Length: 539
Image (cartoon, rainbow, N blue to C red; front, side, top):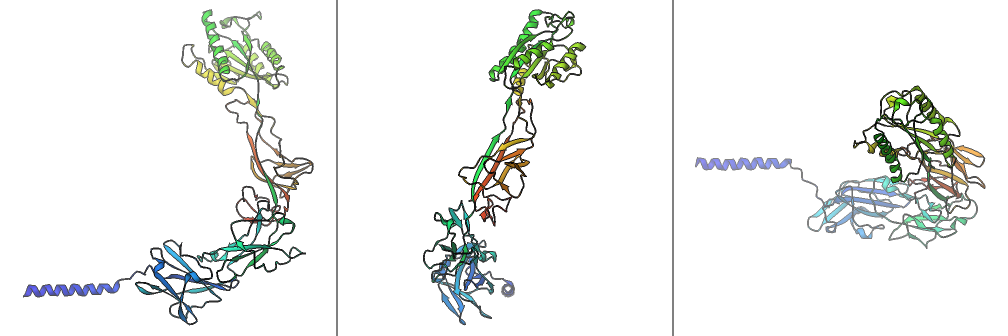
């Protein structure tokens, strides 16, 4: 019997401890329980807005509600509210439900303000409520948009500012403003003609001749709601221009002369090298469709001033640079733009050239400074060691004719360098601003986007800094922008980017002082007096 009694005791103790542990269990709130009940009374609307939540896993169709009214809980139908709405997702993981009561609603001093009844589980009371009061639940600040073809009511839902989730729609109407002073308050709107309010409403033609008042109110199912009214003033009449102006690129004609100063004992081999260099360079010009004019082959001179073969450096003293420069000037006379005189010096040795040769190459470089001379571009195919003190525009190291590295550097140099390219003087570069399409009576201009930033806005005889608060459109002329840019002169083609000027500006034809909606969506009180905001790109 002892083992049996011990077993009974253990079961009894287990039951006792299990029962004791149940006293510490926290039961989870039912997903159907109304939570976070909010009550907000709007003095302007004379309406109390009530909102509560249930878990989003709950089925709202299984619930009915009773609300504290006149000292007792009374059934309510959500669909019969003045502003009904289906349950909607809110506050993450919850459904919000809403109801409204005319006048001021007061919860009970103690007890349940809202009670839910589940079709199966029965009564479920709500959490306590803390009433709030606001002067108005919405406000308007109408503004005309899209050159007065549309209007935005500028609706502000003040219930959102106090974090009251709520669903409602609005309606609007335009009606005549009182004659006389613009500051006169709007009268009450008519009872007829109200339409559903959208993000923007289309306006009748010529409405700006007699600016009206706008009325806005929430849509109620039981009676017309209290309204807000405000004058609708014309917006600024704006026209936009977007410029992407490419700065002119001056592509200089290429005139090329070859100067042969080799040390090759075999005359045939020497000519083979010269032909290979010349043909490689000229063929690359042809393949890249780069215009080039060959001025000829030139050779060093001996002590008697006679040309040498160009294959025996020991017999040569100087270079015929003056002849080359003279030929370059003659060729430049046939061109519209200043030409680039390219002197290709072919030298396969690393021995110092004679002082006379160095002096003449220095004179070649310095000739660029002369106003009637072409631009001097010295290209050495060889070693710079041979010409101490000479700055070459380009140097291609010497390669053996049979080397696979002989042609590629010559060809890549042609592609990268030519044609040498310049810009016009850009230190005081001016860009004319055309009248934007549609503009007929331009009065003011606003610069909306600039890349790069100009220094000056020029309107006729008057000049303004580009950040001036107001920029007038000149009468009888087009305005200009002045830039302080860096001029490019005889840049390598591969390095030349020229540049472009990006300008977006809008011109105001009328109502420039009035309010407008900016590109950022904000409404500003005056287009003319808000220098850093444009309507461009907005709606």
